[in-house]
Image 1: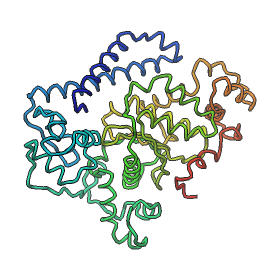
Image 2: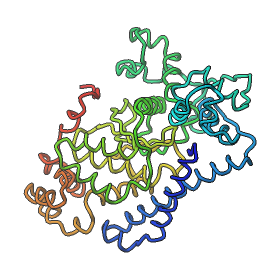
Image 3: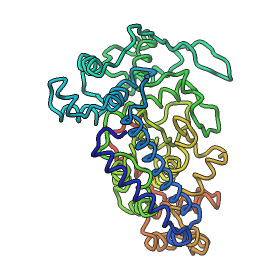
Image 4: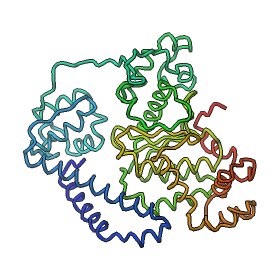
Length: 430
């Protein structure tokens, strides 16, 4: 969101650059560079998506500045911080002028708005609302979550059906000091608090998921896991904002080549976070059968989650690329909270596309079609191709095993047991 004139000028300049990049985009040239028509098209779509995002931000700021917006509404308290910013702009007040009205420094208002008022007290929020003549309803309606929709019908939530035992053992109930028996006895209160910290409502989100699964996942377990990864991600704000135009073929190629390093997975985490993509490792819960997920957080930033259900290097890199493709191509367009993937399960059209592009990024089709390793399937040929492409040989070995449907071959090259140890802070239940 644009909050001041300086950001407005910068955004307009970025919009112009994007327009020039789109107008001069040479599909054939990019296709030759990426060695894939699909990837070239994805790169153009990323530029167009970024252009539309910036265009919408400019339109919104200009509408607020023009004074044509006279009524602003928030559906919940979560929307209040953004409403305060919009109200200031609509009243024609600069950050400096609002600061003067409140008797604080301009930098304080700048900091509040940059962090969406996360550090502001309730008293301060009320003061700012009053300074902006913003009317807040005197009636607060508590909307209790009382139902989960299952097979199209609303049924009462059975709070004990949430995986309280697993959640307790993983220390998900922050601040709770009781025993497991105490947790079971207070399941509703604990789970309500847990869901609230994630900023979610169970009944509202069950249909906003795209789930790839062989067995129907337990909805209570899946929702609990989704809340957990959101809480973890939101604890650590990223320095950079996600821009889809940043994720181009060069960025993706660099990510693939990071795999050749012994600590590649930890470097990959940094690579994603520098691009504004949250990265979380969280083992799946019983009856969810997840390999990974791509989730949209409340602030609009993407989150990639891996469970490391299989502790192998080939699995890590394929799942990572699969979820990154969801971020690039599907997450926003599908109007869902997230994609939740069991990659052993049958794939629909969207999942097939993510599988295809992920595979092509890791092993370019024009190389793979004639690669000696694909046909002779020896450790030497795999290592030679890995050096040529500057990637981890586990990626090649994993592809060979899948295509051959023979998971006994090249077992020494897939990096078994080599990923989880790189993340000692994660409890994998070992």
